[in-house]
Length: 100
Length: 248
Image 1 (cartoon, rainbow over the protein chains, first blue to last red):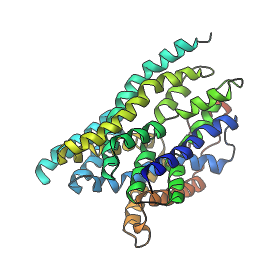
Image 2 (image 1 turned 90 degrees about the vertical axis):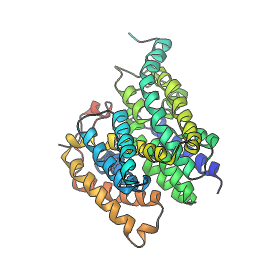
Image 3 (image 1 turned 180 degrees about the vertical axis):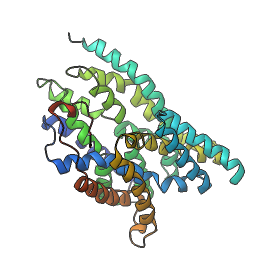
Image 4 (image 1 turned 135 degrees about the vertical axis):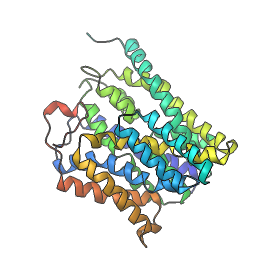
């Protein structure tokens, strides 16, 4: 399948997700299970997408693992998104001097 | 006293500058992922300009790499970008009931994690031009960053690419870790997600699925289990407007 089909496919679905509730619904979701489900979805998805993928993204799995641990520590202590990302990059860059 | 549209746009634009700079860096690493599955800079630019979603686009690129089916694409999009449903519902509460459908569409189009947080933190009804102003700088930066990532991914030494490829994961980490400080359920759930995700990648049948589909499967199972075991507390009327949820 052509790459543009994927790109447009995601565009259409994402646009519907973003725009339709805002245009149709003017009240918050009442169902408690659904609200809870939607509350947990972003955190679960992002963490599932991060591990073990981060370890396979780098040349050396060890560097990826170190980036994960350090990123978590930085984020825990309140570093912003840019700092966490930069820290992850730097640790991989430095560690791969030694292990790759 | 309501702001004029011009003032609202300017306000949004100012707030969009740091957002845009952050976007550029993260989109750059997204571009490297796009390049890895064979996309060119134009395709990367278009994918980012239309979708404006880090996790979603990352999933998109893995799907392209895996030659996934359309059904997979739709499912993965629903899960990776599903949080925008909630944000859209919440933002709907921030808009004047008289606001035209065209502006409702416009505000919805630019919902990202960052622009959403900016919009919900505005006082009173949201002037849609705050959202447009924020998007005016940050969305082009997001798209440009992706295109640059695709191009530079070819030029840069492999070690630099390797280091930059974790920037995106850094952003994911920065989104799911801070709430765990206040929410014990999430604090326990995140390590479980890691373990389950790792096990799933090694299992005979599930491990053969594409990364995107595996994420969908895991997310639906884990988020349902959490919603069942630890439903979020019913909130007062207006806290949905602030986009905050409390579970204790």
